[in-house]
Length: 118
Image 1 (tube, rainbow, N blue to C red):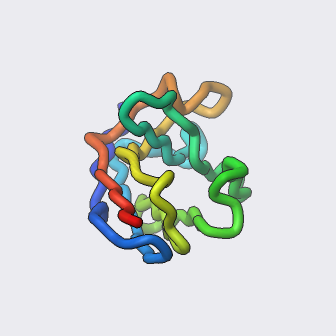
Image 2: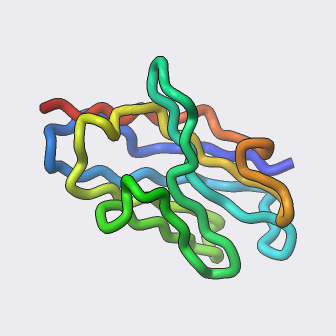
């Protein structure tokens, strides 16, 4: 099972930036892929971005503002978040899944809180 530990959350004002990191252990590139899921109070969880076969995918609301990247040597996933908006406020979870399965059903980290104030 993949073990994930996020870091880098915090509070910023609208337009600010944050970078989340996720250290993954037990991750095998040939078997797994990684991504970020967020959940705000009272809202549905949302798949924000993921990397699959070196291709990055983003939900529409973050395209052009967020950048996902992965350092395979360090087994670390990143999410650079720029031009943050109050609606980006949520708990952000790093997630891992077997190829062919969904991240929502995979392993999640403990989460990193991101708060954007107007």
